[in-house]
Image (cartoon, rainbow, N blue to C red; front, side):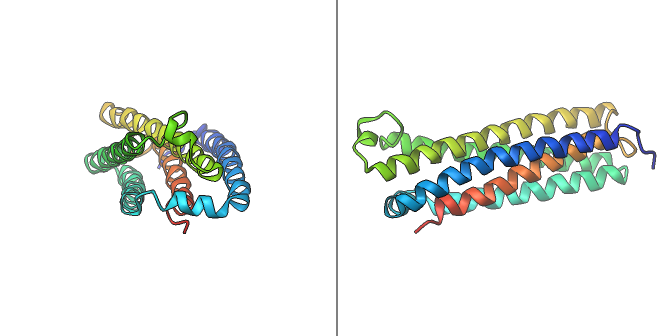
Length: 198
């Protein structure tokens, strides 16, 4: 297998980028922890208003998509371009399904007046206001990361078909899969913090 000289640099760059992303999400998790400690009862009450079934289903979807992302990398390394393309397509599709479900969940909350600035929202207990504000910010930023990952996978799918990404040149797919695993891990932390707090 031919190794390209810039592969190490590309992988190092991706790890540095993911490190900055970990710091970014870590800051949000720290903010969440501080407010949760001060408003534990309000946070617990607000969490009970989230749909655990939807949250669990979305978690299963992301974990499955992480598996298909890893599978696409494994297949491309073996030179199986067709199966790698199928796995890439499934990964992107699962990401889209995740976003559709998240949009539906957000719409339901907004339909009940639970969004920053609404009269109902402003009448909530301060701790609940903080919880739902963090909920929208944290899941919104995560959804943006999912959207970016979907676009990247679609671009790489095109590269596989054009021959740019192949069995001896797969660093772009490897970095994309690494990014997707990070997105998955971030959600695995978000899910219990937001949905399982009782």
